Image 1 (cartoon, rainbow, N blue to C red):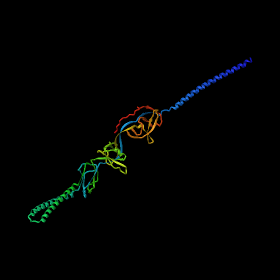
Image 2 (image 1 turned 90 degrees about the vertical axis):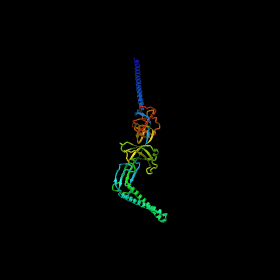
Image 3 (image 1 turned 90 degrees about the horizontal axis):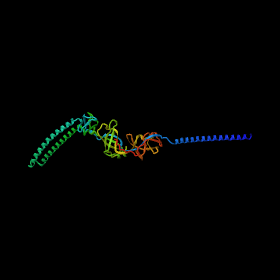
Image 4 (image 1 turned 45 degrees about the vertical axis):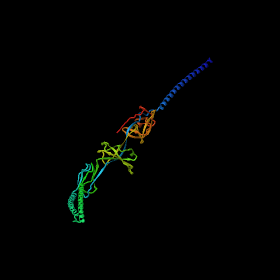
Length: 393
């Protein structure tokens, strides 16, 4: 009995150890399973963190080649094509009538003002009387000379007396001619008492006043010939070479309600102002009320059509004083590129320095993007850029 008790005790110990070992193995297995799950979960989380999210959903466009009218803008004065100075040709006579005022339209030969003619009429009457007297003296001298010349061959008079009668006739003829010249002179002075318009046009200035004493060469009126105006555009010496005679131009009135005035380049000045470095371009304008002489206005010259690579205004980002576009690559990442812009027509802008036109550009929302952002493209466009003809006025 005593020998069986230790043996039973030993069996119990091994049984307990076996149970403990099983429990430990089960615990190790459970721990390993949990560890594997945590590892897989962490791996999934890390993989999720490595996949960046798109910054913005955008639509893309491609630049379009369009034909635009190329214009050149300048400023300048509105002036008269020719402004005529009308002055008095008499001196010492008073103005008795002034028939026109500034802004009046006049015709060639129309009487603008009148000068007192009483003294001149009196001088003309005296000249006519002298002429009549000279005619009588000449007739008498001719008769006497004929009679003496008939007696000359008879020897009744000397050659000296014959010469004296011939001289008397010539003197009488000279006096008659002088009297006729005096009449012509007074008639001319009488005609000059009426100040007439030398051409059709409109009065632009008036200094004539009734009662004032006219002086020779004194300006009385200024006349815009044919109401014809011109725009004298101030253009730099470099830009002068872009212009040619006959080119179309448009002048804009300071009043926005007035339509633009169309004209043509008549002449390009052969000299450049050494002070301002500007040259004048003379543009003929039609008769209009939209612009007036003396205005300083803006205008543009039509240089003809020229192709332009254009994008919508919304695709252009203005930042820090520069213009940028966002190009989308094949991985849907955007790259910011600085560009130079040119003409603008409507909502489109010309891009001057885009090397490759076959690119995709973000069409709007560029203010929310930065260089290198990943985007989602909402709508793709054809790979070939669209070329169309667009003619704008």
